[in-house]
Image (cartoon, rainbow, N blue to C red; front, side, top):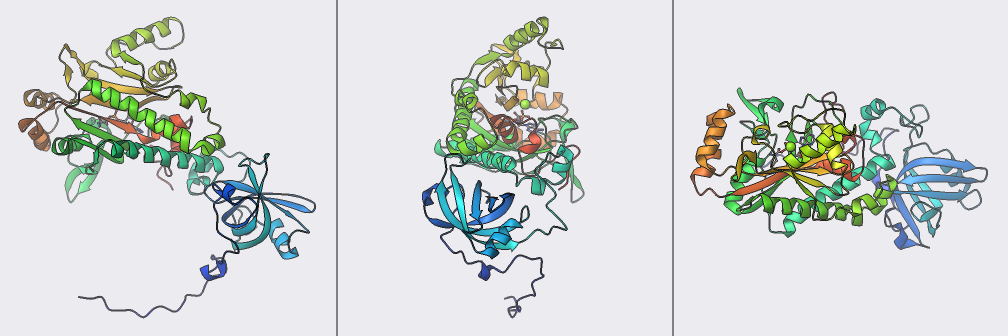
Length: 467
Ligand code: 4AD
Ligand code: MG
């Protein structure tokens, strides 16, 4: 049945504090963005944005505007604009939204290379003095800022990080799209664990238990056997009770999976992949890297091939480091590496290091044992340099039905939930391999951040669900 047609509503009364209606916002000159303002040198343009900061000295005001693409300093002399425009600028409050027209002037001393000689300004919404923007330019504590994440992200540093994140995600998809991978999306609601039962988020699925996915891997194994080379890209969840600078409870993972690929092929894919992503950021986000003060020379060295170490060789290095007093705790052979171990190991190289063939016991049930010595798994962890630790975890997958079936029982996994996964070994099983790369870990490293909480617009952590 067609929906009843409703007469168009009369225009609603606009409360005084609301944004001005759009018709009154006609730009006085061609609209430009700050990032691309250099194209308009010598011309008048209109910017749409917010007031970030304001300085004044006598007859001059220097408002700094931001528009999401960057920031630029404006200049207005009391004699160069009308008295109204001068007064408006002089009393503009932080984060008031504005439409500004001015002439673009090159200035070598300016951070972006340009300044704006302001001609006109229109205030869209003025932040009142009685309720000022809560984040001032002085230092704030992390809790204060996290509580106001929805506003904090407007700061030049935070918005630069989010722009770099977007580039990492773009390049991450681009590499696979250019190299014959098909994007396939695994479900987010799942009946069983992929990465250990201790970090599952339960969901009530119409009275039955279900879980938020920890990894799309098992499903992309299925799509790889259907389509050959695939990848997934989506949110994943871990009920991590750990409060570390590397763990979120909700994070984004990109997961390639390739039929007929072995561990060697996987390591080559991983190093080419990371090189592509990091070099894309260096090339396309130079301005943002500068805003956050990143040492770009440390990213420029990130080119394949990466050094490779067997787990046993890595343990040897860790033991030596402990003897020399560089590592507090002795490493116990047979364990998975802890954060301090990964940090020390990864800080030994100028590019990521690939640690392969961990003892099978410390790794996941689906990893193929090394035929040369089945005590080891055909797996690889890629550890980022500068102490950032694991950014990729991957492996060749068990391809034998009998072995996988035994592993599922050994790990006490619910068999019924894995019957479909066993089918992949019943019908046309092949060697295959894949990995998962955590986007936030990549952002953390590429931006040299102290904590993953700044890598995603709204981080979800043990003690944070707001905003
Ligand atoms: O090493 P993980 O647990 O591997 C898997 O989930 C595999 N099933 C992936 C696969 O082979 N398709 O996780 C992969 C990556 C880690 O290397 C790390 O970068 C990131 O996901 N990661 C996290 N990032 C942020 N917070 C957490 N709690 C994370 N746990 C893993
Ligand atoms: Mg891992």
